[in-house]
Amino acid sequence: MKKNPRPPARASQPRRHEPPTSEAAPRPNRPVREDLVLQACLEAYGFVRHEGRLADRALDFTLRHKRNLYSNERRAVAERVYALLRRQRTVDFLLEHAHRDFSRLDKTRQDVLRLAASRILHGEAVDAVARTSALTGSDAGALSALPEAARKLESLPREKRFPIAASLPDFLAERFREVFGADAERAAEAMNERAPLTARANGFKGDREKLRAQLEQEGVLATPTPLSPLGLILDTRANAFTLEAFREGWFELQDEGSQLLGMLVDAPPTRVVDACAGAGGKTLQLAVQMKNRGDLHALDVDEGRIDELRKRARRAGVHNVRTQVIPAEGAEVDEALAALKGKADRVLVDAPCSGTGTFRRKPDARYRLTPEMIQDHVARQKRLLERFSQLVKPGGRLIYGTCSVLREENEAVVEDFLSRHPDYSVRPVAEELGPELGAKVGPGPFLRLAPHLHGTDGFFGAILVRSK
Image (tube, rainbow, N blue to C red):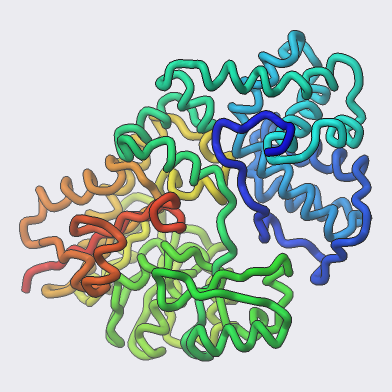
């Protein structure tokens, strides 16, 4: 960073898909109208931090109602809001030490300063930020005082500095230390970078090289994902959802880690269950594994997500999916699943979790999470494994996955299940993925991915085999 305070953790690179803009073709040379961008940033950020809305929905709502913004201005709004959310705790610490009256300012003035400080932490010049944010007097002076505040942060003892520099709640910072040990700072830093825009090629249309050629015809450059043989990283700021290749079902946007979790299923063309299907990203991946044959049962408690899955399946040319909305709890669940009991060759339980592996994409989630919520997730995960394990036939496999990096949601849940089900055993993921790839995704029998090691979201996966 030139002539600006050095951030306690590395600044992130522009994220290309937060959120999709309504204009397909950006005009990078068109000047940004900073007053309109700041107004939209304040509105979206206020929805998230002061009203508790989810960041992606807040931005989508704001940008949908700001029809006068150019495409480059819409991207600027999304990038600035997400950048601030990733560094929220760091920014507040710096401003509290750089501006003597910061805590007493009204909310709007505080938020203007937050957005300005975040821009400086990400490399913009102090004078330009102060001018475009219409900051004068003590507010502009606070931006110039950020280097001294950054030095105060760096001087704190490591155990006090880490949660602030990582912009994590104290209890999550402690868990990161438990999980990652000496790598905790590096792991947290990677969680505060923007995630790449990753596509999974739809095997019904062609492999990823054919997809890459198709994208190049539309002016979109892409590079192969280093781990998944199915993925491409899109090197463009174009809106992926407006591409002809997307509309014709050539690809789905899916993190590389999610693709690897889907690969653990190795779904045969018989009877397979995606027990927590959601909107169907991995369901469609399993359909390709099954070559559109057999019965692929996609289950979820949310009818809206199931409706979205049906639309995506039609676009992808998937024909073997049977969707079913099931009750969340109670005896009605067993009744809904009765026809599948003991009949599935594969059951994937991609369980709801804390989402601690997805902070790159959902930076605001860390501020809503509590220790009690994690305990609730663990209890639900144990119930889901117990419930859906009953669908696995003798000799079949139960694949458990989360987008969490916390051991209590991952290994501990598997260990608890195995302690009560001696007829299940662990199949090391290297036996499914091959020794070369298996060695890259975890030193033990499980899939364990993290941004600082693999460039993916944080994921966990386990293959559990039921004896014959």
